Length: 119
Image (spheres, one colour):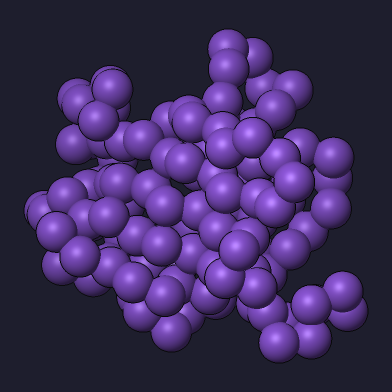
């Protein structure tokens, strides 16, 4: 298990046909050799799995990576009203070039690409 810092950038959407590096997340999680989040290490390091959300025209948001009843999510405050669920991450490795879908707090689903992963 190794703690990695991951950068996600918005992939191609109707509003952003070339994607957008300005719409991004940077988060830190423990990954096993397969690139999957290690749930035991994540639970043991309560304040270490952090996330920062960058969005043009909005103040950056800081939060934590959590395990919810819907899977892994980014959470910025207590309660699940603001949680952003990362679709299928329980079985999907986090590797550069791969895509992840994040369900925003407003219910919209957006594709993101893993741009960087480092210790």
